[in-house]
Length: 427
Image (cartoon, rainbow, N blue to C red; front, side, top):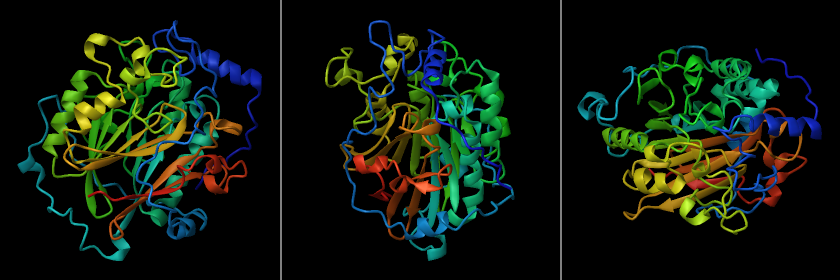
């Protein structure tokens, strides 16, 4: 049964300012609207997502027939049987992880060529930053995951990926008690991966309450974690249609030790295509976050707001932005096929090619400052993999409005060619 959604009013300017003030309350973890003292605070529109992104590899208009039929068919009851649980190892350390022999080796072709048409498509749903839904608009958050449950069968939803900033204030238990049941409706329906964003931390030491609400032991599809009992850096082996994928979830601006651990996981599962989920990676113009390009001058045209280097994390542990992750993690591991991120308000995608000729699709989704009510209308990404057509179809949909973004009366997509789009299934 879908939870009833109340009609939510547009936030007033006074309320909007209160959100910004609340986000700035802890100097150890500045909000997205408050950067380091030597950098002027940005307004919500300082880095608008309406800038045309430098998207590469857009191969034309999406074939929406399948998704349209499913999305407009109305609510359906989601599957309630248990998701097949991947073995839980209690936390794999940097040098740990199951051996290749123990996990088995997939067919060289991924096993996708021989599947029937009924089995050839599967959907990933990407949940962008939900911080303001947890803070003020719980019905929007609940509506997102209720919709996923209702459309599980129609869209063959195989995985849900949350890109972080689950809550606005890590220290406020009332926000986590909104986020937890909103996500937990997915339990026994579809496996999901969560990662911490900068707002999911309380201190510069990256302390977070996330493990109190999303402990690995309570998520049996999680195959391993960097540290026992901590979900901040985890991986899962998930069947997405006929293909098993490695889904690797990493903390905001991962430390060097996390990058080393992630390399170990990717090498261990080198025969599986991999998806990287992390809060910060791509900027709203379609380039990667890169402190060496963006610099620290807010008047420069290359400046990137809210680069992780401006937060109070320990430089000695490493603070890896999008470009650093590309160089240290994505380039050395050609099995990484997709990267999903949030953090910077905007929507963009890019396709990057490694020196060996393989490529990876990188997708940014963050609608929290989209003009209108409820901080983004609950827009989420619907990513459909078609193994026969060898395509990835990406739509943006609002369960709150029951509309694709292209059907939105505000029609933000007309000002941005990044939605909808089709990518090649680069397996």
